[in-house]
Length: 527
Image (cartoon, rainbow, N blue to C red):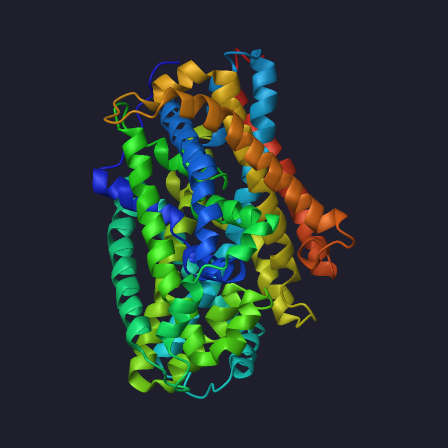
């Protein structure tokens, strides 16, 4: 096929901010600090940056390359992108089978993540308003904060409304297109996010000890980054470091990076653009993310509370909703503003990531089924509502677990399947398309050169081995190590609904991607 005219990013800064917004999400500010606390503090950066070089950056390059090449042929999602490159070594029908299965895994990953992730974004929106209106002032302990969260979550008038308002905003942004919607939102939200983050870093490091004299936030910062080298003897430290890199860069998640990259012009510099967005993400995570949550949590609960984080008994999300609201509540007007900045920062981080997920869905229906963006947005909303509403229903029914559906969807879609998607991408780009052709595409219009050995050996061999190790580790720890872990096991009817939804959406993904390829390549595929 020749080149197909498609919408492009209007400006370079719009592209960089949108791509950075895609990567900078909730995990930068709540998952990374907790993982660093649990796996060696400063020592955690060794496996973290090792994984960045051997796993994160190589697969980022793969996704940008697949995305721009697919966009030049009129494709904005993974299945047809993988099909057109896989045909070099496979027959059209074999390439289509490979692409349809990989595309279906990407589809189910995307829709399940979007369903629960947009709910969490709604929670952050509600919490930002709650802080500004003084609702945290009555919270004195972590238990008080936990009860506040449960009361919110189990009240559908609050939780459902918060979710739908945020979801409507995100759908509205994406329905306007890349230039008039996503790019404008990124230009507003990302600078706002970074400004809020810098203010919170200053607040965190100058707060002092509002609870007890020995519980200084600076001590919390020092505690976090003190290297605990003994943790490096634990293989889990290296696995978790690689997992965090994978999640923070949004690689393998429904093909959102290839989707954004498909709107690049033919001669856009891929290596430099990819490294720029990666650098912005790392600044948000390592510099800002690590300087806010843990120091503030230390100022609230001291070494006893932080010890629970280090032991893995309190997650990053737990820190965000159990330690920080009562701390902000004790600080009066400053705390009300600080809490608003913290939770609105998380809201902006979530929204800029979620609109990328939503755009993948809309792109499928607009480009391969010839619907306009408004109708595509309506179908995307219906799919997200179906996969996300059970989070609200389970909470409203006040089950013992409250979040069994969410936890199960997060484990399979947000941890396991995205590794499979990335493996499909590497195989398509390096093994089926070929090292030479993919390397040439990576450097079309580039101002900097990626060493050929890095592309051939690191991206083509070490990265997929890393992925297989991660997959094996997750499967071993979740299913083979004595007992199935709670997140992977359906504990109630909503857990089983989650399992059923994953299977149903995978089948839907197979059908949609099959139809998409048939519509685009009827002669090659015999229809």
